[in-house]
Length: 276
Image (cartoon, rainbow, N blue to C red):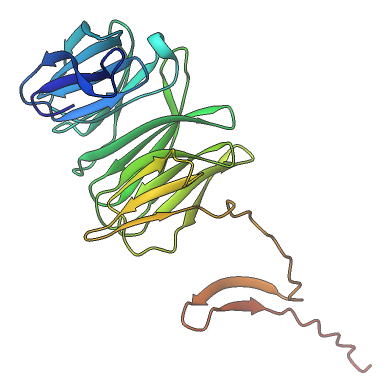
């Protein structure tokens, strides 16, 4: 996919060479989302749904949104998948349904920061829609896959720069990589999203590698380098109880010394027996 349209490349019969099999032209393509057999391309406020067939590209539907499209993503579901769309000027999200791109739900994000990346995925059987903004913050919702309605709206800060969301598989589990100035791996534990920092300073883009030489690996791009690596086993939350013998009221953490300080209140019981 380029800014001038979609090209399908295939092997020639009985040959090792690759050749152009089909082409669908559209000027000004700015954002795109793909599945195995579908491509959704945005040009300005217009969305185009294109089917990828056997050496053929076929336009299935198109729709004009109220504002220019900033980001989009196709969820699971094949020919009837949900399509998430983030818009520029009104700072909102739309949920549409394939194959006719029917609008199902509108969600206003409020504020002035434009959505920059969007991802729909299923973690531990729960469908989520995540939307990263230009200031490093991110909204996430649970999605009803039948109605497209978003609920349980929550917000978290991942970094200070625009964030790019990408899904990947690790140890047969789907996880999410947030590319930003503070890279983060997002995974589900007991049906709740958990955010784990990565030991890299900044990642601009990420993609999974499907190669025999690099099993279960990721390619991570920074400003001037490309790193190939693996994600360690996803961190688990360890809880330990410390008995203070007093009532804690405030907790502070010093990163340099990795020390926690707790301000507590201790109750003294004074027994007074007046002398008759």
